[in-house]
Length: 358
Image 1 (cartoon, rainbow, N blue to C red):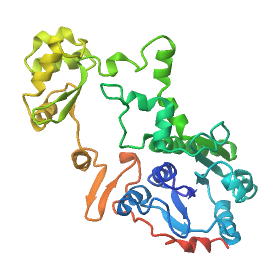
Image 2 (cartoon, helix red, strand yellow):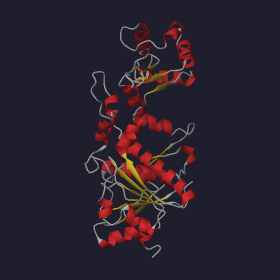
Image 3 (spheres, rainbow, N blue to C red):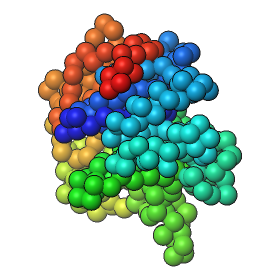
Image 4 (cartoon, rainbow, N blue to C red):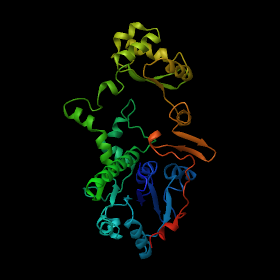
């Protein structure tokens, strides 16, 4: 889809690289610009995290603190379609690589700046990370235990949602450029991406409703709930539509529950207590087998290893390839370019690109 589109990626860690990884899997040529010491993400998890989101890219090492490094960066930017950067606002401009600088040599450039709070806001120059963005957006308060204490997430949602938002904006700008011939400067804020996810919660609360969004989706009713199994694992039941709930009740031989779909999910309520007892009668594997035969929106809560193996199943979408050198995931399923064995670039492996076009 993005053949012959060249993306120059100056970003580090996760949001920018996740965006360019998604573009690479759509066919773009992504040139990763790293400092001579390598991307800051490379040392983590023995390089596996870097590999997961940078396979299929090219690497050029530049010292942007030197005149030579900045000049080499300008030459690469002059022939790129897209530039991604995630420095603090103003850093690229001070290096002579800001949008206005690059646009002088390349009017068609799609220049994407990713930051925590946007290029111009009251918090633009403040340092923050994913946990801060989740906290400020109101999203973290939604991930709370029974006592109301926020649960520390193991997935950096702001990074990945921000990366997806950046890729979305880049694709829209490339489409617009086909019509107008003009480039664009995209200001992508990580916290804004989370705020967009909270739009429904904001609207409900502002109208006098609960702070946790729809009661039907927040664990307050029996048909949309997590239930513990005999072996201490969990199943997710999400039978919101009446026909799914009916099919579940009939399959477990509890037709008397059909009229109690919206019963409260709290101890002391007969249907809830009955469901808790029911799920504890079988192990996760037994319920998993049951869920494959009954169309009732029932699914196991899988651990990382189990989910990895589930996505690697060739009978499904086969989004994950398991090989001796790692687990490789497709970003777009069958719509994207899936190269089994795309190489992870070594730092400055593709230095020859600096000589092209000289």
